[in-house]
Amino acid sequence: MTKLQHIFKSSGIFLLTTALLVLSACSGSMTGERQNPRSAESAEADAAYARTAGQAEQNPGWLGEDGETIYLYLVLNDALIHGDTPAATRAIQELLSLAPTAELFREAVSIYDFSRDQNLALATAETGTRLYPRDLTLNMMLSELLAKEGRVDEAINKLKAFSAGYGKNQPGLSAKQKQQDLNELRMLLIRLLMEDQRYSKAQAVIASFPPHERTSTLLFYEAQIYKSTGQQDVALQKLAALVKLHPNFTEGWMALAAEAELAKNYPLAADYYKNALKTNDLPQIYLLMLNAQILAGQYTATVRQVMASDYAPDVKVQASQVFMEHNRLEEAETILLSLENIPYIADDVNYWLALLDHDNEKNYAGALERIEKISPDAQNRDRVLRLKTALLVKAKNLEKAIETGEILVEEFPNVKNNWLLLSELYSNFKNYAEAADIAKKALEEWPDDYQLLYALGANLGFLKKTEESLRIMEQILAKNPNDALVLNFAGYMLADNNMELERARNMLRKAMELEPKSYHIVDSMAWVQYRLHDYKKAWDNIRRCIQMGGNDPVIWEHYGDIASALGKRDDALEAYGKALKLEHEDAQEVLKKIRMLKDN
Image (cartoon, rainbow, N blue to C red; front, top):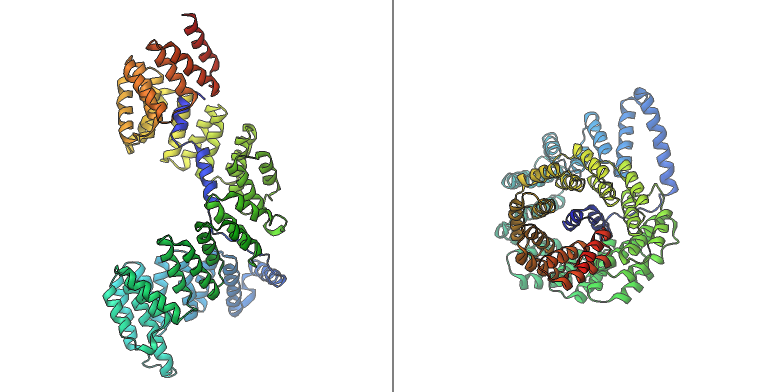
């Protein structure tokens, strides 16, 4: 590692660190559940749909208008099943032009809202309510969308106006149904008022319900209002009364569990989650219960519980990730090993077991064998390639790591971090020109990206293109003059090249003010002071750097140089020896300094 590269690595910008953080973040995910293999009936339906779609594409007019409507419904249904929101949106838009029913408007608003196209969702809801002014659901959707846009008063006024006229000129509506619908409208009004923190008005609407109509949801809202207004004890009493009166009300148990977790009473939280599971056997609740049990220190019992449960294998994989979140790696491994012979989750299991080996730093060869078992068509192939790259680096196979990094960029060129990773790999391989070229190419897509600019500037610095490197560092500092990492790199580079030393000292002084606990910056300051022949201050700082935790070969070389300048021969020899033990990159240079000291 060169002196300048030691500063680059110390910044935390170097991407292998970033890549591993991404991998670690993956290990904590409790989302992304894999689906079980689709049934034979689903496969047959898919085949029939494909035949119809093929004929329609070849001859769009062959269906006729009614047939086209049916076909578009098939397209919509297939898109919703497969989670293809763009296809669902296109089908909905065509259907609305052919058969603009109230039901279709509701479906369209839901899809647009789900895809976060709020403007289109709102416009569709407004059109739907104009065409179907008496439709309860469309009017409620419109009010909710207006509230999301911050137009709360307008949402509430529309809701009140609709409620006031609801039931008129609707002869088919029974008195009982009308009352149920009006209650639903009032419940939405309460929710909108609560979301806008109008708690007293929300409480007034709740009070307007007669005792026999006070549902579990209404009681839950009341408890939430007490909590939001700082009346925690009353809120807990209300929740306890709620679950006693309505033991099948899942949200009540979940709210109690959350409060118990806030109080760090994890055994009680786990019990509340168990009660919630009795009412709704959702995997998400199950995983929250496991999390509480782990926090309560119930490791062995929780592992046994997971392995004996009837939950699908993919849920058990997620359970292992909960253990990984808490750094309980042995328990996570035990669960995963029990699942490794199940074909449809084999890719996931091999990935997480390989990640465990990586995190344990114990068996890189075995982890790479597991990675090779994962199908090239596996979900999340990008994270598999990133893990493979990190494992190859750990196994000191940089050539193979670069080859994998190239594949990663080729297959996933739109992910910035993949370019950063490849640039760093080349930099680690001391191919600084290629590392700089990769960063430069990525900057065409992300021209102002801080990390890419930093990677380019640093690698130019390694190539001794000091002026070009400084220009890029100054470009970063122009936007963020208080970037301690860039100030440190630029200051150190100037000092290492023995140029503009006063400017370097000013940069490093500012960096030290911004990051006083960074021993790397303290080392840089010691080095610029050494260059300025201010040996006493340099000595104070290099010793402070060591006390703060500095322990890499370049720092010990600096220590030796400064000690030697002060005539501290024994201290210098000891420091140079430590630099060699830590595998200093330029061992011959350090040995030369040792010989010179011994000869004098």
